[in-house]
Length: 306
Image (cartoon, rainbow, N blue to C red; front, side):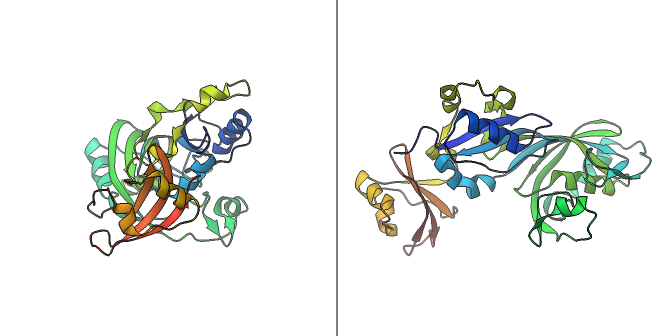
C-alpha cells in the first residue's frame, strides 16, 4: 500500500530562504505528490524543517505538536519592531557588565508554563488576516497572550552584547518573544539575530538533507531514499498491531471496537491520547482513545492510510 514518497522528509533549511522556497524545490524533484510542512521557519532561521509528503500530510497535527529544541543568538541593548534583526530599531539602551548569573537568573523566570504574546510580525491570524500584513500597514491591533511551556533556557556563551542561548520548549513558542522578554528582564531590551532549530520531537537536524542540495537536477530516487515512512514518523505513539483482515476492513471504513484493537496487544498505562494502528510495517490508521486505563476504553479513527 501507499507510495514510496508517503512519509516525512527532514530538511536543514539555509538562512535567507523561506520554508515555501524549500517546498517548491521539492515539488520540482518529486512532482505530482501532495507536499506540506510541520511548522515553518522564518527566513532568518536555519535548521530542521519537517516536510510532509503524500499521506504524510495527514500526520501534521501530531508532528507539529512535538517539543522543539533551538539554539539562538540575541543582542542586548537594542529592540526592534519585529523582535529580530530584520526589523526597524525602536529603542536602544546601555548594556551594563552583566554576568552569566544575571542572565541565567533572568532566564529561569521565563521557564515552566508562561504566558507569551506572539510578535506583531507573525503569521497569527487577526480577523482573518495575517498579523504581519497588518503590522506592515501600520494597523493597530492586539494579539492575546497564549500559554506555552519552556522546559529549559540555557545560556551557552556571552560576548556582550551578544548572548547565545539554547531553548527547549513546547510547540507554538515564539523564541523571538522569549529573547525580547529576557532582554526586558535584565533591563536592556534585546532582539534575536540568529536562530537554528536543532530538533523537533525525536527528529534531529543532523539527520536532515541540506536545502542547498535541492535543485532541478537532483535525483528523485536519492531524495526518496531519505524519506521516513509513515509508521516511523510517529515514534512516540503507542502502537497497536492488527492482522491483514482487520487492516483491510479499517481501510474500507470499518470502525473497530476497542477489544478488537487490544486483541493480541498489551494494555499500556493510558498516558497517550492517541494510538497508531499498524499491520507489519504499514501504518493503517491513527485513532484517539478514551478511558484507556479501564475496561471501558473507546476508540475513534482520526486518519486512515491507504
